[in-house]
Length: 245
Image (cartoon, rainbow, N blue to C red; front, top):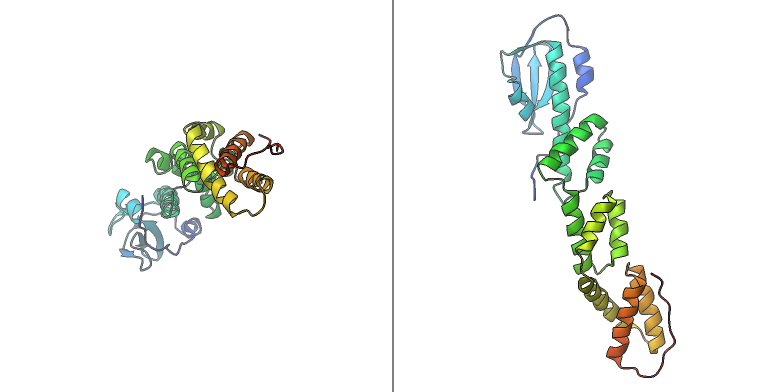
């Protein structure tokens, strides 16, 4: 999914702006204007006072010329605008590729968004299926096996680093069949095998170490080495090598 957004707007410190608003009088909107740097942000004038809000928030609270508010109302609007700002930032972060919930939370913290708002935004994005850790884990595992030729141990570590729950990682890896992993290991192992000069023992050692570094289990490596050795039809007895699981 690709979500197109405008360039990031120039933000104000809304809480500081509201600190200057009078608390004992009604504030009437005298002018509404769109910010030049963003089609989604508007500058709301209350005479000598002003604040910016997202378009969705402006519409929700009917912030049009002539509407009246008190400071307490504006404080609620500021909170709603912060949630909307965080949500828009979340969408922007999803523009290039899917993200995990942990990656999204880290991104929002970098934007100095509070933990309560982060939790609300994560929930909203999950409800909209824009954040989906189970699907992310399954797609990541499949892509790594099929396209990157990585083993399950490598994939498990990557998903852990992305904050995916252990149970979701297990489910994703369970969907990779032994045949799929063997095919991945065999293709990458065969390519490595054919580039190694030397006798069959050199090929076995170097190919085995290469496959282990790519996250394939010792048992899978032994199976691949056996197939490659048979393909070469080397004959004779070769020394045994141990590839730990």
